[in-house]
Image (tube, rainbow over all chains, first blue to last red; front, top):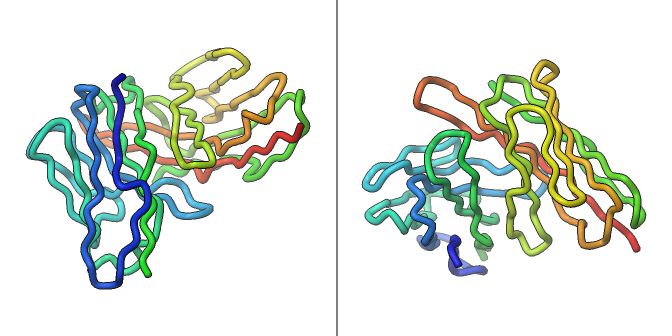
Length: 114
Length: 112
């Protein structure tokens, strides 16, 4: 079945460490997105990519980095520069960048900084 | 700036009750999505609509473009409907560029 796979599901990090969250999709979707979710708040966009080898910053990109070397993959690195990284991270994809396309979400990755 | 407001933020009801969750947005939309987030965090897209009404099983979503308002209804609610429901406004900020704005979610609990 087609879908989005995020890994790991749970991740613990010490302060000062970089961590990379994986997002893989086999839906042949062009656009991929990374969101951060904090308790009581709506999802906030970190980065998005509409085609391979291209990505744009979202609303809260500081302290994060991404790459899009393959259509299927859009990994997110949480760097030590991110001051408050403990959160739930969701990856999503859609066929195109227009609103007519349904969003598909991964199961999420919960990052906790110790 | 486009903002999306949902109400109520929390809703507890008894099994069988008719549920309504509301969503208001401040700027025009290209499409409005309703998402369901399960306790484990996984998100499922329920509806995507830009006008009128859509129905899927016990779920109904409506939108009023003039009033910038959408509602999600659940008929004959069941404990398995317990989840967070999120409204998403997908709007065009300029030609070729679109942005999603998420509501803060409505936490629904259905008691048996």
